[in-house]
Length: 279
Image (cartoon, rainbow, N blue to C red; front, side):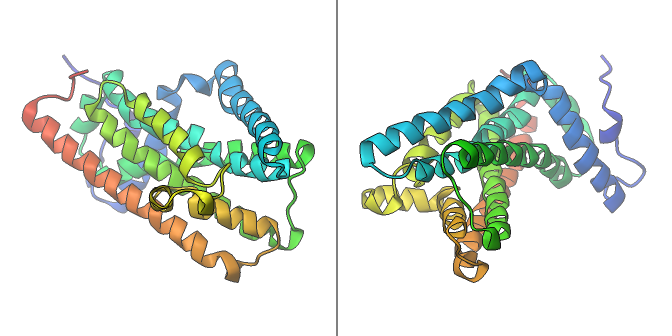
């Protein structure tokens, strides 16, 4: 049986060239997103990535302000940043795991394409998607729930949000790599989503959590990035939140590198054991 490989993933004469790697990174990522996701259709995208975050903001703003007498804006901003996990975690998990479930993984791994470019190309659509979802949620919070940003530090808040979405997408890629060996990778993605809400200061300030929960929270995405967004919204400049942003970026890089190494190891293992098609 002959398997056709997408033109963007076929390697030219020199598969290691920078131009070939760029084609794999850019075109491969876009083709992957368009081919693997049912929610790319408006009928699925709007209720999943717009409707869900809207109700999440309203629910936690109402519950949090009632239970703690805090301003609803505190909970709205925290959840507005966290909802990017819908695209980052679930999207990256599906971007990797669905290659296996849809039976395209053997054809993909049969190509001589640059593996780093192949892997990194999956990031871009989900980072953009996560940013869009978070920006929508922030705008909803500004209009309806009293979220406010100091105009002078709006750029700092935007930088912190971009880094946070990258970090979230990176841990999603780790879950995606793990899901190559699981029957249901989305179970782990759901655990991560709940973990962010509990451990990362989205609705409960990190400092009031038990010590062991603070340790976990400091190792997860969102904790430092969300705090940087909150401080920038109150007027803190880049010098005040640079440490938080750099920490968030470092966490994201560690997860991204770890995910790539795990993905590479599982690819080699699957080749040895003949388990590429096992589902």
